[in-house]
Image 1 (spheres, one colour):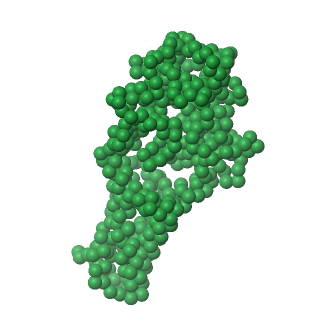
Image 2 (image 1 turned 90 degrees about the vertical axis):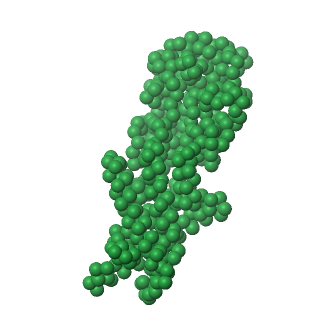
Image 3 (image 1 turned 90 degrees about the horizontal axis):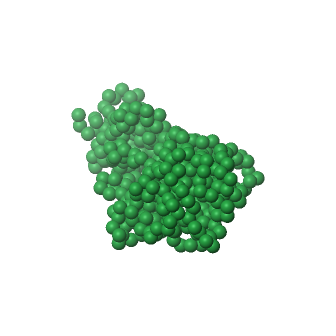
Length: 443
């Protein structure tokens, strides 16, 4: 078969695939730009009152994080177990507070959404990923807090460390469902080999058809629908090729590397927390307890207004370490590795990582982002195949350099115009296929 025959034989499949993928690609910038935005990204102040606070009691035997939190001016001990379950107790009386996680989840969602108590809200604990809370999110379990607003605003929050995982509403839910089920074929995710095979076959048909179409463009002539198909093809075909190649590379690179498990901290024995540190003159502080490198409880206390935390052992004795030392130990970095505070999401540490504030340990490809409160490495700089795939996908598929040059909104307009041209080119190709069939042409 020659190039023309192959191009025409795949026209039906490739044309329909190109139209549907272009249509959902067109939706993506709309979905991104119209998505509800949180009023703030940084977590709320974490300090709590210390007056009358006793050592943790009435909590599970083991936890990966203990925090002193404040709710309605009262201090509580909040324990996050290894499975993510949160249990709480009054920090003064030791009485169990089973409703505190849900109450704090609603309060957190109000804070991130910028809504007051006049807007009704309900909270439901979510312990698995779904089409509503997709795998791109790295926090589980979380609480889904839905507000009684006209657009059905909902925020997913993790009250263990006061994180915001996702913000959505009714419009975004519909657009996300369309994008997931058409663009990434989420409905086949239970049979991953089949999903990969189907996407490869369909996108492969677009690749082959486009390649032979580009060959046919040289010296091609025609009029009417054929002329429009070929004229638009000079612009749309190379773009379709770039989208298809980068999309397939992204699909197989992420599948082979697999989704990295969400980072978790080491659990420790809560009963070993024997004594409160002596904090003379400190009225409020950000207090948390995590596991040291030897598995023992390690206190981290950041007094209100202080720039660096104080560390104490399980007996409440002060230790000769600071945040920088702790961060280097968690990252297993050299003693002279640079440590820099990260208080906002950016190019090197994006919103996908969810956790703030963190500190960056090291530089370049070897950088690690450490969450000091939870005592874990939240993320690491991409390297190897992962780094190249991220660069290739961001550059070729998402046009991030274009966004840097002309602004994200203008980039979105440009990509929407490009995918619209692909859809139009494919539509003219389908029209030609229909015309040939009516005339009884096989090729």
